[in-house]
Image (cartoon, rainbow, N blue to C red; front, side):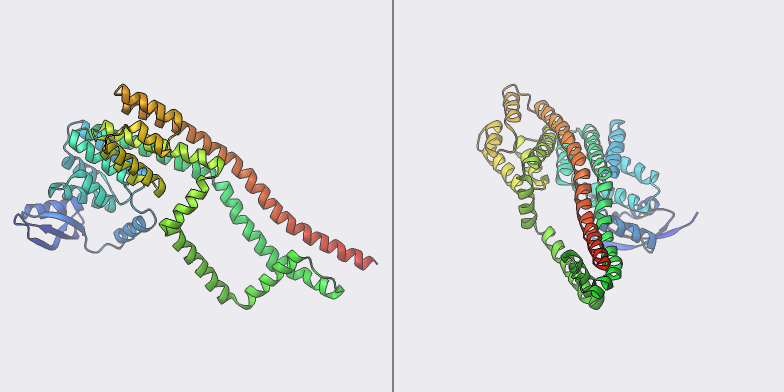
Length: 409
C-alpha cells in the first residue's frame, strides 16, 4: 500500500499545541496515528501534494467552497446515518472513508476534529464549509439544542436541492441569451475590422462621405490598431472599477433597490423574499429556536441590506412585546394576504405550518415569475441584437447602393 506523508497540528491533554509529520496510507489513518499519540488533531494535511493544493485552490476561488449539490448530499447522508443511531463523529468518519477525494476527506476530518475538541457541530460547519450561509448554521445550532439533528439535516438537504434546481433552471434558460450577448460584440468587431476597411476606399475614391455609424466604427478600429496598449489599460481599469463597485455593499444595495423598484421585478423580489424568509423562519421554529433569535438568524442570510434592516426592526418590535403579524405588516416585507395568514397562525398557535404554507405558495409564484422572465428575455434580446446588427448592415448596404448610383451617373 502506498504510504504518504501528512503534516498535523494538534493539542495535548494539557492544551499545549504541537505539530509534526506522520506516514500513513490515507488521511483517516494519519488522524488515527495522531490520536494514538494522545493528541487531538485540528488540522491534518498532505505534506506535499500539488493535486490536492490545486483542488483546494479551485474550490476556494472558483466555487467559494462546496456547492449546493455537495452540501445537500452531505446533509442527506448525515440525516440517514444519524437517523440510524450512528453518532455524529462516527458518521463523519464513515463519510471520510467512503470519499475518494482528498479535499472531501479533509473537510470531514476538520469538522470531526472541531467537534472532538469540544466545539459544536454548527461551529464546525461554519468554520469549514465556507459556502454554508448563516441560515444553515443557525438551523443546525437550533437542532443541536433540541435533539432534532436527523430531521433538520433532511430538511436542509431538501431545501438546498430546491435551490440547486432553481439555479440550474435559470442557468439553462440563460444559455441562449448569453450566446447572443457573446455573438453581438464578435459580429461588431468583424464588421469594424474587416468589412468597413475594405469598403472605405470606395468612398475615398468618389469623395462621398461615409454614414456616421460607419465613420464612428472606422475611427474606433483605427484607434485600436494605433494604440492597443492604451485600449487594454483602459479596459483593465474599467473592469477593475466595475469589480470594485460590484463588491461595494452600498453600490450593490442601490442597484438592487432600483432594480426591485421596477413594476415587474418588484413582484419577483417580493415572492423570492417571502419564500426565503418564511421557509427559513418555519424551519428554525420547527427546530425549537425562539422567534426573536430566528428572526435575527434569518436577517443575516438576506442578500439585500434594506431587507435585513427591516427584519431586524421586526425582531426588535417582537422583543418589545409586539405581535409578529403587526410588526411584519409595518415592515412591508410581505404582502397583505401573507400577513393575514400569519395573524391567524399566531392566534391558533400554528405559526410554523402557516409559514411553511406561505413559503410554498410564494415559491410557486417565484417559479412562475422566472418562467415569464425567461420567456420574455429571449425574444427581447433577439430583437435588440437584430436591430443593432441589422441597422449597421443597412447602413453599409445603403452606402454601397449610393456609390453604385453615383457610378452609374
